[in-house]
Image (tube, rainbow, N blue to C red; front, side, top):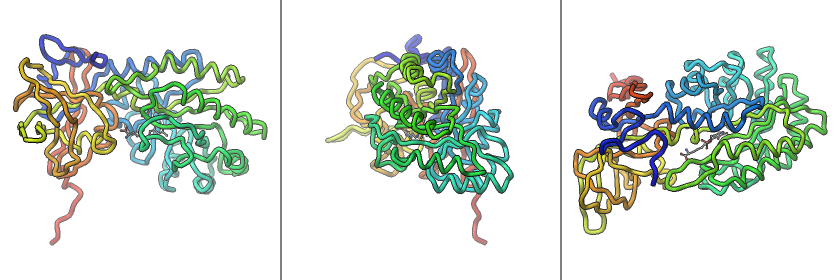
Length: 420
Ligand code: LLP
């Protein structure tokens, strides 16, 4: 199977761009996340081509990977940011994102988060319920402001992905139900503290088919027509994120193939003049990252052979949480026997596995690269078992920069207090 972009086997050893992964692991230790700047920019360029010639704003959904240097990379290349918490807002500002290019998504924004976002002047709140609209109205009026809002609609289409990451179906907690959209818009338009500017949807994540997007676009445009018939003008249509990546032979549409099809629908319905916004996360960074881990022990058994590595579910939570598949490749492939292993971490849980039934020729001390680890790995990492979070390196050509140091035990205990 081909390797993700900018990851190559060079002189018998995996490299990201011009940098040897073995060298990075020896210098900085493992587990270690390594990202390729070129791969991130290449993924972004596909969206930029797909939306070329439009009034558009690509707001990177920073929950996928919120490390400051990753945000800087995308912001400097022209992205705005999609945030979901006050913490993400502070990261976005620290990374140099212009406040008006920040949009605030999520079902549970607190008053304090709303206030801070209004004070710094973010571009738009993506509102998910009538109750949230009322609170935002109140907070904005107290500040003597009008909050720009978009209402997240639930188009009720099946994105055909894992149930935990599908969000546009009737049974989900997300968005305003199709049937309640009009009355919610009318209500918002009547609130003195709100300025209605757009409509948004997000149907799920790791979507690998085109049809759910086309269906959702049709349903959203039906709503745009109905909303505008009431005299409310929508300046932007935000289509969310969700485009999948190739984890294991998956074949999602390319962003520059998908978007022209969606834009054609917009044009056909007479909305080609609206600003198009999107919130991609995984598809910008997922395949631009790997996690390097060292084989600690081999533990052959009667029923299963276990390969115990130094990365665990606290570093790579996706297999434990979603039974997700990540390819695992030796950093320096060796010949010989390749027994079948379950690759597991040191955490004291049976759910702490990284890959199951993988044929690998390895010995203790060897390095493995867990692929497609740029999205929803570091940003979901925890300190379970008081394991420090991994270090991160960004590769750019032949250069490698440590963008986050490894977390130590003292870092983890810093905010705690011993009893006297
Ligand atoms: N916009 C909204 C409103 C979202 O909820 C999300 C992701 C995105 C954009 C970005 O979606 P993306 O382009 O990354 O698919 N932790 C899970 C994925 C959770 C996605 C949550 N929402 C995983 O590891 O698969």
